[in-house]
Length: 228
Length: 228
DNA sequence: ATTCCTACTGACAATTTTTGTCACTCACCT
DNA sequence: AGGTGAGTGACAAAAATTGTCAGTAGGAAT
Image (cartoon, rainbow over all chains, first blue to last red; front, side, top):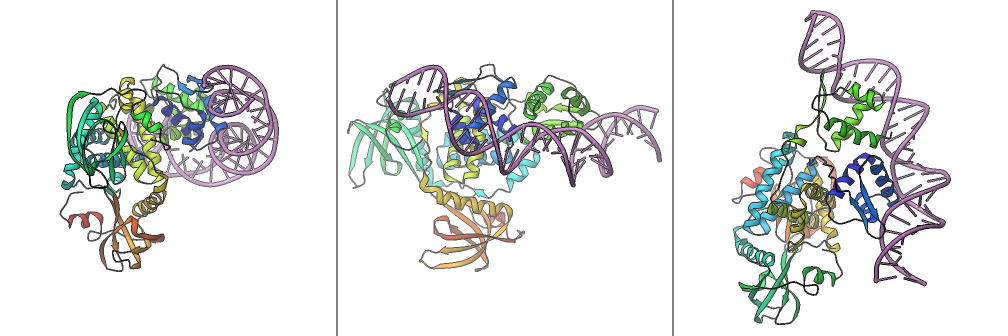
């Protein structure tokens, strides 16, 4: 990656974010040294692109939106389309529809030669009818998460004991090969994980729950080591 | 004026004009040689900024950048970003990078309020270090597929017998939870599936193979019932 | 059919930039 | 007081950039 490419990418990166990003993170993404990032920022500023930097916080693109033209490289398009296929196969029917229409929009702006090379890509993600049950679980839980509605679930734990619980669904974690609901459990009065394949039944309740500082997806994730 | 400054200025210059401008005029304004202008244009194009040139006329900024603003509905963006995360977590590091930069491009064109609602979406796909071995397998096999290079593999079958085979890698199938290489096996003289977790070793050979009507991903997939 | 005009490409060597590293300073927050 | 992160200066090695020259190609006007 040449310097100029990097500069254009940097503008894109900055305009893709709402929050500030540190020079170190940038260096990480761009695979250059931190020193180079400072120099890049300086180059951009002297090319009349306003970037605000604050010690202890990071960089933020100035408000007056410089519009960088959106075009995907072949491999970027490939990654998006492959991702779209995964969403279609591994999540719920509603999201699948959205993935498909997004796919169409992307394809419609790609030049012919890119479409051709995309056809030769080796990945195939089959849509299995047998996964319909999972897809339904996805739909129910995603909507419950988004609308912050409590759910009543019959859940079978590792030792085959089935319990009924009231859950506050916070997030859905996708490990490769298994989906897990992350929720606050009223029964246990704390965060718990629930594997999708162990739900015997799920009913969305009318009742809303309210995520707070001490009860939210971020709070839970922050209490565990790894990244999101 | 450094090259990068010149490139930004060139974009500004081009986007300020409705009529084409010749390379020579540009060279004049920028105070560089005409040859350099051609190289600059190429740099911009390889940074995915579409510029159209016509002999006898000059250069014009691609219409694509101005006219159809590729817009996504919130849920379409959600589907694409979720897919991108899956690609990052479940495939190889190279595709992961492409997914990430595609993500940035999408985010950079979304209005603020959409970005905010995307931040509240419940799905999280963790990137596990323990999957590095798989990711490496992905990289090797994807590239072998794309370049149509034979591979020599040590493979352990269902009954724990390890065999060495020469394979013509045709495609990679992603079932949820397991990846499978689809290849023509020289040992068995026919198509075979190989689960990623059963490869003991994979070496890409120098030798190319040639897919034909009777030996290709399409041909194999057509011979099985399901869709892709 | 010939001649402009202009986009493009390749090669080469001199020049200029870019890069990482190291060793700092400064400002802010807890 | 210690941690974090922006920002600077200097230097040598590595890499990109540049102009020059020599050519190809395609359209349009003559």
